[in-house]
Image (cartoon, rainbow, N blue to C red; front, side, top):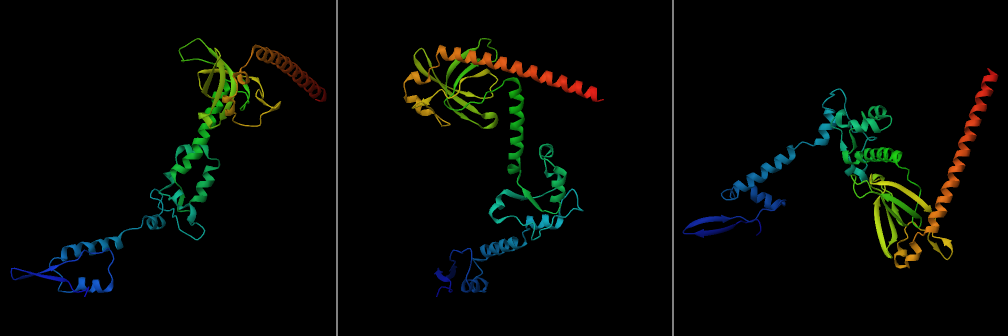
Length: 296
């Protein structure tokens, strides 16, 4: 009953009313489509569907093209798909076919160690990691370079949450006047060039919180006043973030005059120690040079 088309007589003329075509047909409907009876109304739609099926069959698989043709720029090189060179099933989204040896960027050449060896190994592969995945390593290298160049100008001490700091900074690059802010570090975020840290302090008996970019050109100096300034029951706080001190009284994160004087005294002692060590090294170097001369 389903295979028989619906017929309708209007003014003595007979019409076949087609049913909506599904994307896939079972055998009975396929027979009905192929039959001679059903040609008048269904024909153009059926023809379009059949043409689409042909197109899908004839459609080229880009992966096969890369496998057979290989690199466009070097036709001698053929990237073959072998059992050893399969794309991992779990990670197939991170990989793409190699279009040519020129697919590698100049930055990749510069920052990836043993680049030529890697390319030589990849000549037998027909896929590699996608560009946005490969870019992550380049970004890491650029971050390291940026941090190294900025740390040459200003030395940044090692500090964590709970340490007392003094930060000297400017409001603008044109501004000559330096602002000084003293307080306790709430936490530090390490993220390459975009690293930052938060400080809480007291200005005119009002708690103030600053968030500074660690490698900002506006910061002229970061000084470590005291390590482990915040205490809990007489012991150092073993936390990376000490946000809970916001709710404590202001005396817990107020850096006093006596703290600054103690820091200055410590700096003087450190300076004397470094000078003595430098003199020792010089003496040792001179003695070593004299011994070499005597031996020769």
